[in-house]
Length: 285
Image (cartoon, rainbow, N blue to C red):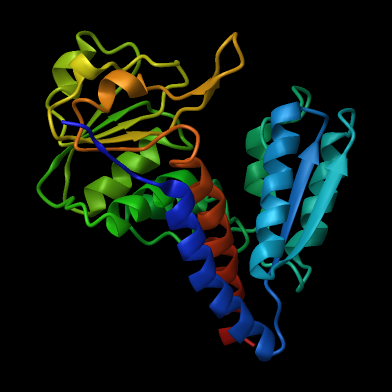
């Protein structure tokens, strides 16, 4: 058996085309969805991510503001900028690129963003609403993963889903979204004793640990749907996921590649959240 590859890049492009039509409709009514991205410091990976977000916004016709602040920016200055953007009618989505410099309290900053503009879905109000399936903004990577499953026609209800990783950004919200779709969900971590016992029982396996190639083919149930959220750079410069792709694809039924799997969906769902925020703002005019 060789797994069917889930082409996140192609699915993301299809979705962006659909969302662009909604942007065009909003624009015809006099409203352009706007996204502001704040980056503090010179973290190379963060700069790449922000650049990709700004480029994606331009592709679908969003207005975007890229605000780059020096690494020694005071927390009070950053909070003041957030307060300004919270009340700017041209901005419908606001996100802070993480990580922030160590002298800034990340949680305090995330809590300062208006829940109505929190397109990353990190504000405690939106995190809490995720538990009850009422959040305005589901976190982008987990919701992008759910969209991949939907587009591939993969049944979730009644299936055993195993999530490896418990981060607030991916693991925990991923488990909740699967639970909302009536999956039986098990959450593991990289330190789970006898991890393979759980992963081999998964109909749907989602891995987000940040440990390169830790899940191998012998840890996967034949025919399982395997979603690799990890992205790691090996010493030789090669990008790999948290799953050993070569051995896993010989066992799985479906698998996402790295790069080109979940990654493109994250920015796509960020765009979707921003457009939906603009649509809500339009309805409230």
